[in-house]
Image (cartoon, rainbow, N blue to C red; front, side, top):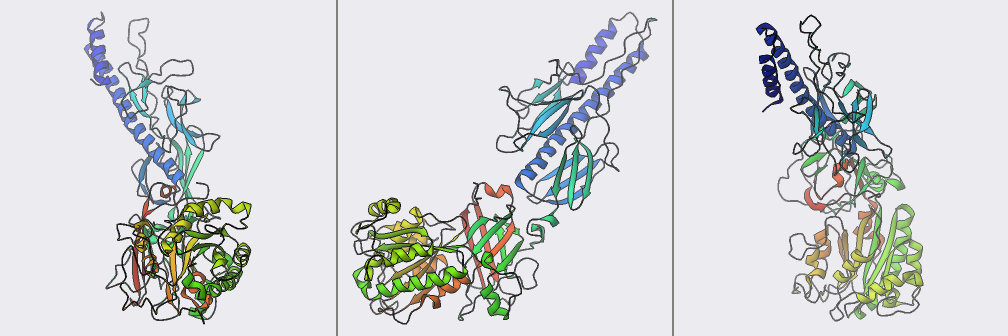
Length: 616
């Protein structure tokens, strides 16, 4: 039974036994009480709605979402956010200037307050006294986050305020500073000395707004909490971190016909200068049939040719192209392009150390030395190295490091294949600070299969210390098929998203293949066998890398002229607005590239992508 009905029944009974019965006075009292209880019910409904809306606001601040629109209502505003959520707030009696009606003297105010940890918690204000709302264990109740609580207010049958912290399953009385329950309605006036009834006590005006002021200034919605006077502000979309809101992203185009571009696997990292920006780093995209590399244009540009969606929602993006791309495409640099605009890269050399590579080994090592020196002068790049021998085991491994350490590693052990055969089989002169990678190398590999680029690839992925946000780029040198000895986890199929052996992941890296023995393994005549003798160039095909075929002696080859060099030096950084809700769970990222004339196009979808910050 509703509290209103109980109070009416009690009033009727008390009146029936009164010696001063007056039908008119009775109905005056009934109507007065009915009006007051109705007012309380309306206040309850509004308070609970406001509580929920206030929580939505704080969640929006915590998740760094933006305000998409603010629409006026009869007594306040409806606010829509960039993540699709919305909140309706009441602006009080004087909506025009944002000043709310005063709270009733006996009505508690549920509000929020920021604590010393920077987080918001629920408070109650009774007769001007502020106190934290706490659970049975005395813990403050957070407004946002995984442990967030939404208080729900009601009035019990005795007319006192009660509150629930479990969505209405259970309620407890709200107590004032003295520990007394707080009355929700004013008392009736007592009878006068002459026997005439006193007039009803007037109920306080509805305390139905959390805010004493709501205004828009300098691109922000600013709300002032009525209980504490604290300001809460949230930016509009036009103040989005990259300078444009996601609402400007527009629809992602659909492809007409087959893809003819290769989109490399991206790397994601939160911008070190602005934690509200997510960077997506891509290595260069080569125009088919040419030695030219595409320049990419983002949201709002007349020549926009790249679009990004996260979980099906188009994202506004801005693109920083490398200086090389701009110089080639326009003959001059028209945007800011510097060392910091280059995509960060961790490059790992996967080197076949088998006897058949003896002709190429020294030249490969020397090319790595020369190329890494040149690349380090203009790029934010570090290096690693893995060797693999006939027995299938790891025979060399150098974790991600600087170019000088790479040079010392490749120059320390003579010539030929021994230049990358330091650890694993041959354990001579291993520095103490590399003992850990040595132990891991010794324990890795099948000990019995043939040459296997997949073993080197997955060893590096599982054991190397890659830098957060760096593009992982592998350069695989071999003159043999990939021979995983029946192990799908080391097969070329392990990086094929359409294979049951796939175990690579959306952002683990792009593989580039240098294959130096077409005489024995011509693609048009050799019979490749899955899980036994596989085409090593498929590592590149499946991950968006490039391939070069060269002769067995590796003569007249310069890494600087290889497609992988252009892919690294013509890299892109794609910037988008980052909100904290993107930190949770796994996401689906869709990238579409389509030139304005429709001549070049591609689409790729990466699943199970996790976005993390350096602090995570």
